[in-house]
Length: 421
Image (cartoon, rainbow, N blue to C red; front, side, top):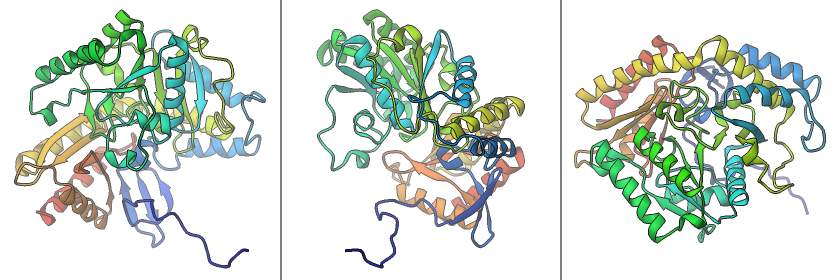
């Protein structure tokens, strides 16, 4: 029997703001009361080219009129083939084979599947604080917050968690944290997951949900050495930190290290659902036939938008802008840190910066962080928080952001700091 009650969104969706957006333009969202908000969330790092960039809009509109859905294990279509070529040009080393899906979690699952099939080994090592997705395999590799896994235990087997060199959390300098983490990794290989049973290591070069924590060159190069020595695959999750976000096209490029697999999503198509992972052809062909697919992966409109996104990134020099504007933002935040002791740490790279908030007992202050973001929203600035204790303010503006907009956002944040003191 049907009923006449209207449906509504699931109550399990936790809303970060109270905004009901009706349109977006550039770095701004406009709500149903025609109020404009400076959007420093970028849809969690998705709208790198800003909201409704004219070139992206035009490409999507033109594609909608030609072909919306061409299921890519049934037929081929031009945007998919062109995007494969263009994205391949952006890949490091000999990475040239690309699999497309719809969301970051799918490519994490795909990378895990390929690693296990290609090596014949069951285990994967991930790093504490990492986020790789919400579906069962990727969630089993996610340790950024216990709430994501709560009520679903036990997780998938074969996942081993190693420490990440989060120097601030340990209270150490970077070298001490790196030495400790590499020692512990070797101890894991000696006591927990034999190299002959370890297919891969998967890591975010800059952790996202875990708190905007960059790795470092010596640590990532140490992973590369161990993977080479033991015949393991090194997979880089660039879903949030990649695509120019950190001031280099791929965040791992800061560390002079070559991965075997790269995973990307978020900034790939300026808001259309699209993700991908890539590997060298000789590695990708070791997967089992039929192990890759999906109904909506490589959607024609999303691929057209992704091609336009690459155009904008290149023509407007957005990777360079992310570095220059990121340096300015960091300088402004570090200036504030000297005045506000509650800003316990400022970290990250490019336009992916985190501010960790502590209380006067030197403990994570999630409540202050929540109030801070509410105060920012009331002044027309939207931001998000992350971390296990939800006490890290993420600075994640579109890559098109300019100096004036950054200064406006920092000024608003300063007012919010005073209001919530």
